[in-house]
Length: 273
Ligand SMILES: [Zn+2]
Image (tube, rainbow, N blue to C red; front, top):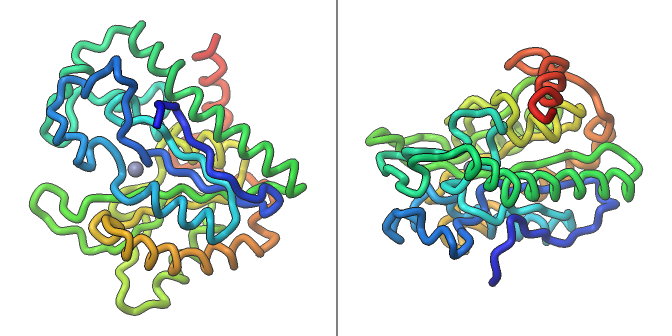
């Protein structure tokens, strides 16, 4: 398949639901080779979120909702960071120095923003706009990620984690829905805190006030087809029920633990000027 900075998965925009997968792919345009890393590094989680593309595609098919998949490895540029975030382009990732990112001249950084990052975010904005128009209401946005079963040598106990900042609308019922299965350990802002200034949820949901949640599934559970289907079957009815709640389809500001939203808008405008 030829390289594209994003991939759209068809769905019915009138459903009022948008699925996102920032780290779905480990692809790089051929000009970048493997960023000076050995090809094996691209089998690893540092290049992408294992299992997420297939989980998102399966959920999209089950729910009939459109999805936007990031088309490039996060080693090239991380779509789930603000343009001003120091970890936007990683010099070092989980012990591996990324030669293709050292040094990182500002013109190369700007090129990666223009060729990869901004087209992906543009596709998200367009999909949200199309779904808003077709459904006649504010969409619910669900972002899918996966995390490693170990951090250094410490095992992570959670099967899944729901990450969020301040809008609890979609988050609470997803956590409750998953915890209804007593075998599941479900993290609430674990293994990471979901409040990240200018990340994908911040840009597309927190600023405009769209209901949203970021779902992290442990990678070993969705590394094979059987687990992907199991997790899709587990998540689809929960998401379907939440999407049927009218409260998910009203734009409402909850603010951010990272600081005032107004300051973000002003800063973004200054950055663009
Ligand atoms: Zn991710």
